[in-house]
Length: 392
Image (tube, rainbow, N blue to C red; front, top):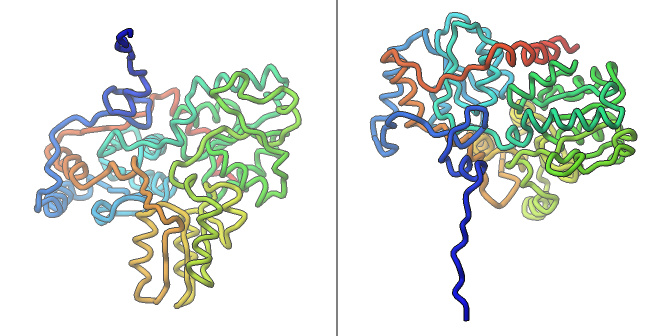
């Protein structure tokens, strides 16, 4: 009998990032946060946040994404989706500090759209986006080479979702493309097809597919998925030449969890329920839903809903729970679409201790966790964002 020898296994750089044991400023996750945070059990955290914000006065402007925890969102001067918040930041030139309670790509967009003398702060650098991490600059450059070899690059216009890194936004700007949000994706695609014959949609395949098929009348056969982990993207040159939509193989880790079974289950449990989902959900979920729309659409739909109506919402749980509490007095029954509790883990990195630490540091004259996009990247990313702003 031989003795098994121990395996000499070394963790990969990606594994170390996921464990939070290495630092990569260009990654959307796995970056350690410097400094000593107050204890999460500190009973004075709320008062400390209020006091620090009061000391800063008009010098600070706090943005809170809809998916943030209630303990954080209470300190936001403005709440909204990623693009609304970036625009709000740009509309506050008097604010010396923009504290972005969201994730990394959102803070990057705010830095791109604000003045050079304004400082954008992300309370926890490990608050990233797994979807944005699914498309790196190197992978997208390789994809463009594949499209070039297939003879379709010059016919293709890149359209990148707001939920992407500054590097991907810059790639989009360099190649004549535009950015889109979940609420204006159809307008962005209409514009793109006026410029070329095909679209490379980054990085969320579901939003691209749902917009093309549901909103623009294309077929599923018009779409192919480019997988950056396979040679040539896993698609043949013939498939690329035949496709109208070249979808990047990326997805939202939260919205991708919802299934057709989730929809069927909630309809059985709650007769007469309205199923309302985000377009980042899978195509079969969107097809089975009653209503589909962006985060802002979801909020407005529930505001306009009649008393006594029942709703199952397919989006991040912090927002769903907040809406359920908000409309409870109006006898609107609002539930999470899936039985499994699922927060956005990276969005939830922004907690009260991190926010207190960031605000108190700023109040003491020390800027922490500043997000800065380099000038060359900012130039082309801003160009892509400005194309979106100019959409009719």
